[in-house]
Length: 447
Image 1 (cartoon, one colour):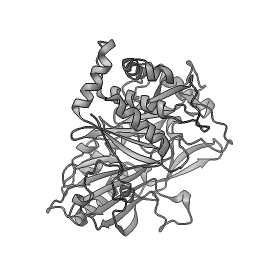
Image 2: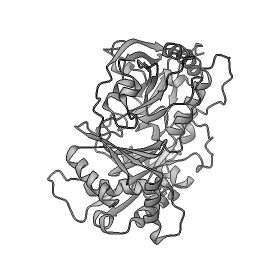
Image 3: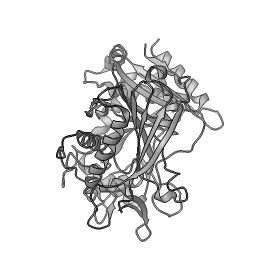
């Protein structure tokens, strides 16, 4: 049966921070400019930390990797100038913008007293990994929180000669596909030979601007309008509280079992993501606890499924190398009683068919709805798939990552699903009482 991996005992990687700096574009900009941010970008003002681990390579000691990566970043920031900029609120429009002022990206060099072997299974949600992707450079800009870099890169060497490349990136800069585009270009510039950029990204975010006037043609239950003071866009975030973290490891046999359970009432093709997402939804819905600890039998649970828009939009179409956030959410809702006692195949079908509703017309309507209402995603749980992003396939001069993963954070409302060499992993973060119920429903499904 699928495996539950609890927190690793190693909470401290004994990281020593050696150097923090700002990295600037290799060429000066011809003039300052502000980048328009779409209504999708506006609400994603939070950091996404990731870690990429590499084994020891005698040809590429960590200090050489750090130098190459810094030079590559300087080159790439000419192309991605907005990543060296800063967020600002346009007081007239009430919208966030990125000021392309070449203020710099963060770059940190660190070392750990541990070896990769001592850390053990990199797939465990080790809280120590948070030391591999710092969120701010307080030593450089301690009194200017608004002047913090929008992205920080960190090279951490281990005593075995291996190293990690950590990244803490404000989600406003990239969605998953856009981040993969950036990483491919960054890796290409880390080679010694002077290579041209493999392709040119599209950074025109006005392609996802609302229409004038906004035309909302569909109901959009996947969003709600928060009651907040009118001081800029709301952020899709959640409160910080004590959480437990687990990794759920699905082997190919586990996935086949879930697909068999899902196919009992249907002949439709079922994806691995669909069955994992449906199971995560079921466990989360049944484990949810009201503040008064009294479950309501008619409570409705809503799952949000992240949908990429690149292949869906027309008039105008969206270029594949679009760099920004070209994602919306498709929602699926059901009563918890039906989720618990109904067939698993129904949940899987809801998850698998929901993205089809996000047509080009529906997506434009959703963007216009956000223009009018300045809303946020409305759902109990979001499942974000990294299965096809290919972060672990980025080819650096020193090779591909041993392992690439999200770093645990305060997000209890998002389940990250990402590939493992032997199957699929899901990172779940929940308050301790809710986590115990989640694990119970997860394990009981396989009995």
